Length: 292
Image 1 (cartoon, rainbow, N blue to C red):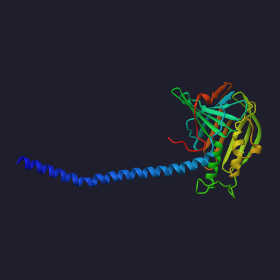
Image 2: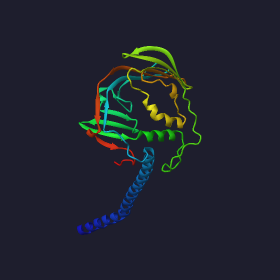
Image 3: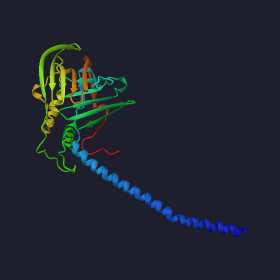
């Protein structure tokens, strides 16, 4: 009797196994198909992303200097308020200025976040992000000249559907609203420096700013870099009347909702800082999109 039972069990097991074989094969085929589809989808997404990235960065490696030396450090507080006067938590940042305004740097005043620093290299049209983690120093280079142009044009929807196609200048760029800048003649001292007051007015905003020329630097150097591109796409500024020097204080009101933004310089020091790119592991994000 026992051999018969054993045979029945074996036959039953074989029958069940035969019934499962099609399911096993189908499951395996489905997994393979899913993997293949995901692979193709990833390749297609990578191709599109790479075309957009190449267009945005100009297709060439970003240029940069090997050494950046700063001679002036300015501590500035930034905060916003809603129409009811409720303020958010102020953010304090250090701004760095060299002997010329060809490049500027910044980093958080919070000691916990000072392992991240940014440098804007205007002649080379690049932004350098410096990071230090557990003794390892890395630098990421971004070609912001091309990226700024790309984003402004994209925001105005002047790019064609195909991101790989050559970009063309818009035939009818929207007209910008640069607003007006008026010098009032009023003066006051901020952080030990004599400042002059200017009033900025546009259809969207009203601002009061205080600038000093005693520091021999300009917080608006970026306008020489961005303004031609912005003006081309209807986002111009009243450069002829823009105040020179460093903005030491500013208060801006959005006329639509009454919210305000505020800037105030709290301290200025002449503490030199030098950053050598040779000390960092550099990743250049110009050209093709990096792969993981």
